[in-house]
Structures are given as C-alpha cells and as structure tokens.
Length: 107
Image (cartoon, rainbow, N blue to C red; front, side, top):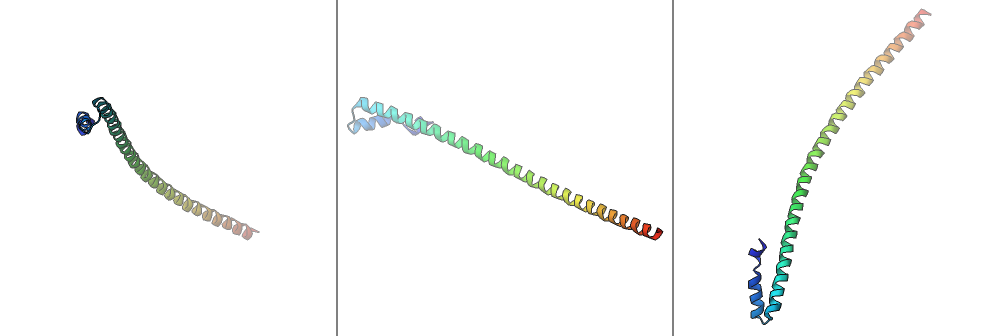
C-alpha cells in the first residue's frame, strides 16, 4: 500500500537529478520509504484503536441505558415497599388504638 503512495525509485531519481550522489540518493530514498511505511502502519493502528474506542463507547451507552432502567425499576420497588409499609403501620396503629379503647371500656 505504501509503495503505491511513495515511489522510492522515482524519489531517488529526483535527488540524483538535483545533484545528490546516486549512493546518497538511494540511502535517502530507502530511509524515506521506511519512514513512510512506519507512518502508514501507525495510522492504521490509530484507526484500529479509534474503531475499538467507538465500539467501547457504544457498549458503555448500552450499559448506561441498562443501569438507568435498573435504577428506575428499583425506585418503583422502593416506592411500593414504602406504600406497603405505610399501610401496615397505619393498620397496626388503628388496631392498637382499638385494643386500647376496648381495654378502657372494659375497665
């Protein structure tokens, strides 16, 4: 892929045409090809990491939605428990008052 982007032979020829000795032009062209290859590989790695980060972001969003649903369900359960507890406390209080009133009437 990189060789299609960077033609080291053409680059060396341009250096030679500009007055650079052939051996130096070849060495410089090879070094430039190595750099270009490393840059291309680094770019591919960065793109791959970006893709992984995007997938992780999607997973995090899904987990966030699941957590929100679970929190809402738990809040509803807590509210139901509060209402049930309130009914029991009121019922128990009324029963105690009834028992106390009955005991007073008996005395």
